[in-house]
Length: 219
Image 1 (cartoon, one colour):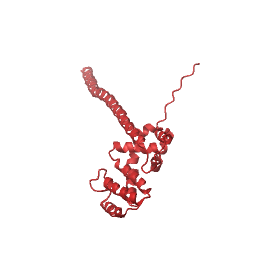
Image 2: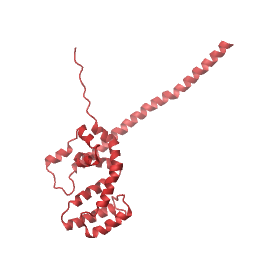
Image 3: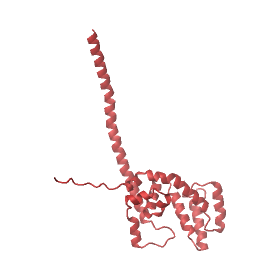
Image 4: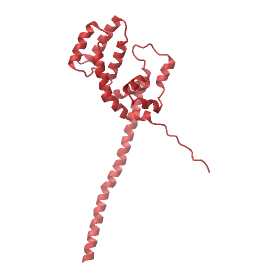
C-alpha cells in the first residue's frame, strides 16, 4: 500500500510539473515574438527619425544667418563621431551648438509632437540679432501670431501673465520682447525633452562605437 501511495503521489507531482511547464514554454515563445516585435518597432522608429533628421539637415540654415556655402552645408551633413555625440550629454548648450545635434534634437521633438518649443527658441535667437527697427517690429508680430496668441498654430505652453506682457511689449518692439518666454521654453526643453532625447534609441545609436571584427590569426 505504502509503495503504491508513493507512486500515485509521484505521478501527481510529475503531472503538476508538466502542467506548469506548458505555459512557461508558451510564454517563452511569445517572449521571443514580442522581442522581435520590439526590434522591428525600434528599426521603424530609427528610420523615421533619420528621415526627419535629413529634412532638418537640408534646411539647417539658422534663421537670420547668411546662407551658408556648399562646404559648410556639407559639414552639417557629416555624422558626428560617437565621442562628439557623447559631448551633447554634458550640457544642453553643447547639443544646441552643434548643427547636427540641433537637427537631431528637432527630429526627436517632431516625433514627440512638441517641435514648437525649439522652433520658438530658434525664432527668438534670430529675433535678438535683428538690427532694423522695422524688421524687429514685423518679426515680433510674426512670432506672436505663430507661437504666443491663443489658438496660435504653434502655441507654446507659457503662463497667461507672460503672454499679456509680450502682447504689450510688441507694440514697441525691442530685442528683449521675448526674453522671459524664451528662458521658460529653454528651461522646459532642458528639464524635459533633453533628458528624454539622451535616453532615446536615436541618440544611443549615434553614441554606439562601430564594432571592430578582428580576424583570428592563423597559427
